[in-house]
Length: 262
Ligand code: PGA
Image 1 (cartoon, helix red, strand yellow):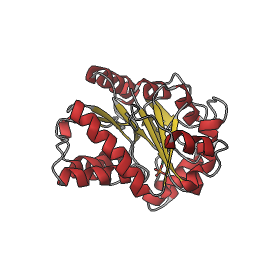
Image 2 (cartoon, rainbow, N blue to C red):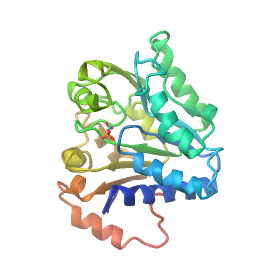
Image 3 (cartoon, rainbow, N blue to C red):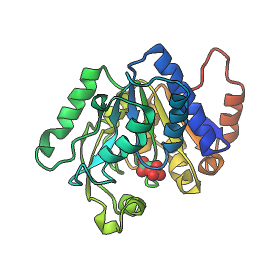
């Protein structure tokens, strides 16, 4: 099962995951990170940016974003190309040519998923994949019903996801209807998964993903299939977990030979 770590704050979660990434990069300077967008991973990026300001060099790191909107111009401030550039590439001092985002331009969209899969394979695969979770249980933009074997492809967003993401746009009508997203099968190929979730709004999805049955209806339940998955949650996001005391106990009793996350 996934290791569940309950932290006191988003900042503490960011520090914990940033430290693991720093250790990964120390072993492997050109490690491949799977990059999530949305609010959830921001504490990780902020903590990493602090470490970069203090001298950490991430310039050899390579990266693949999880997803992109289809049809939103790359230059739009809410395209994931723009978000990754603004929130990740610039503050972390990454090398722009080493960071990839799925191509959501309508021209050639039929082959964009396959091209993205090829690029991930050519890199040697993702070493550490960061994930958020949608209130509907999605990871990436794999909406309920997504196949556990799915690879990068176009998905239609649910109304709930469009409502959730409307805060980044002037209105829900401006939120694109389609996305191109790594599939659940793509995500499961990463060597390590780190899923973060904060706030009461995620509690139901977190409990269903971790403790419910494996089900395409809860795409994040796919992480139960991964041998090295860590879930970092605050108290609110953890509040519906039945086995919470066990997770706390397991973390408190964590053997010293078993490093956090890596
Ligand atoms: P959020 O989105 O991080 O903005 O809450 C998570 C997701 O939809 O995967």
